[in-house]
Length: 232
Image (cartoon, rainbow, N blue to C red; front, side, top):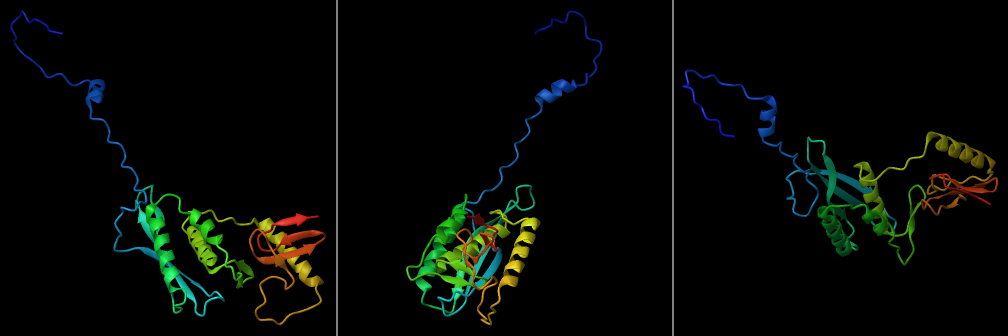
């Protein structure tokens, strides 16, 4: 609106800005920068966090060492996360060299692609050796060497928080310990087999956790490893 000044100007003063008006003319706040997500275009840094796991499958002459390197994204922010970046498998055995190298390259490529990489665990653990699987230390059945590599990746993803670690409650652990003690006390035979598992010698396979730890007491088949129980 235009105002006509008819009188002579004899003085002036500076009027302070209205707080409400100032707020309206302030530049809009910049949105927070989006957190960096894992993707194949992220350049490999000079330093990565690594963890090495040792396995000694009976189907291989020598032990295998599985190293998984992680990249730290959004370091120092609320969005900080640790994501797997690459995997290496090393062993003195050369019989599995070609497919092991191929497998590590494919897995590393999936890691760098980003997104939900936990599906790899189920895919690898579902691979069955046509010659039959094997029991590793502790009485856990592995259907193949590839499945054990999948189990190692699962362990690592749980360690860095990408998979939830399903732990039994203290009450369940106590009940299983009591059942185990009662069952072992009722057995009269003993074994001196150094290769015996951590569970009773006549325990059977658990369909849930693939551990030879199922005992039958009071008409119920109970797994001493994961707690799965069926009665009937």
